[in-house]
Amino acid sequence: MSDSSKTNAPGSANPADSAKQAEAAPDQSTDVRRQAIPNLAKDQTVISSPVAQPTGSSDAPFPGAAMANIGNSLIGQTLGHFLLEDFIGGGGMGVVFRATDLQLERTVAVKVLTYRHGSDEDTVRRFKVEAQSAARLNHENIADVYFVGEDQGWNFIVFEYIEGENIRDIVAKAGPLPIAKAIDIIAQTAAALDHAAAREVVHRDIKPSNILLTYEGRAKLVDMGLARLQQVEAVEDLTVSGVTLGTFDYISPEQGRDPRDADTRSDLYSLGCTFYFMLTGQAPFPRGTVLQKLLSHTSDAIPDPSVMRPEVPVDFVNIIATLMAKQPEERYQHPSTLIADLKQAAIRNQLRFQSSPSWLTDTFGSGKAMQGRLFRTTLGHQLLRLVPFAVPLLCLFAVAWCVNWFFPTTDPNLPRFRPPAKSEAGRVDQPDSSSR
Image 1 (cartoon, rainbow, N blue to C red):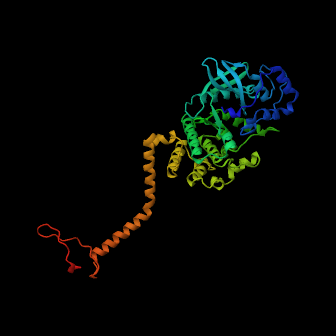
Image 2: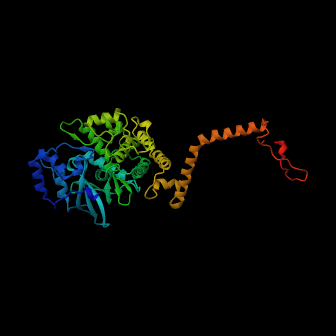
Image 3: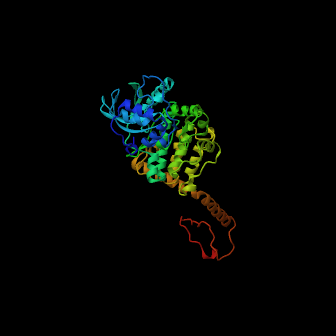
């Protein structure tokens, strides 16, 4: 998790006081959450309506407490064998903490399901099933899931703690990424999706804030396999009065209509939108209401990143257009095909990377061997570009030679292209000047 996304969190609060505060000001719960958790108001799949206060008693802890109060109240407490130490942020499903695994003595991230979701048995069941699916994944570009549990009424999931920063925050600070860096991150994320697709896991919430970049330059996809819960609730919440939906800047047309239709091609569409964001600093359809954005994804022309950034090569403009095709069957059908196209485009445009990316060296080797093969391949492409010009010139030369040989000139002042005659001794006789 990125340290830059942390929120200053005071010490542990009294649970009873937290509940009383939330009940005293229910209409301000949404504002409190957005002020205390910056990430909640940005790039979130679903921002729920103000939490309705339950009537009567409940066994769940902190009934009706706002998300910010939940985050502050849990600091310093232990869920299972995980000590919650620092409040990182929150999202549609719950709040995230930096924690310590007391058994293995390592730093982890713990995502705690909010009371609103934790009190619903079906949501808890799906939460555990999706978490178990994500736990089957083991890839260098996916944040590992370590544990799923329940303690003191709180359902939580434990996953790898990542030292780095998410792409959204990186672009917000430094602007659009260098082209080679953006391509490297997209290829690494595609490799993660390739691994997940082979195990029938669909992310359903690919966006810049769900891709973390470590300080070593490795992309890590987070919330793998959990976003389906958020997307399903988004559709259900559309019928509720007063609900505020978060960003739909990266959602595929079919997923906007029905999240159950999402598959790997939907993830690739969202990856195309994320690619556009990396190159331009804004989402493909950045303005308008939620409904207008959904309609734009469905019917508006695919934006060209080179309009805002002319130095973007046409190869990558075409890749984004394929990723963001309106119909799933017109997109890349598998992440591996996307990676292959990124490789070829990187070669044709002679991109230089800070290191040898694994997605590139898988084909071309590593170190000096990779650089040599990459150079020879690039030289071959350059020579192929000369073929349209070289062939006509060679044909013209061949025609001229044939004409001169079969129809020799009668002008004595011009040389004739005739092979020299050999004498009986085998010596080559010099041509007589009189034969010219």
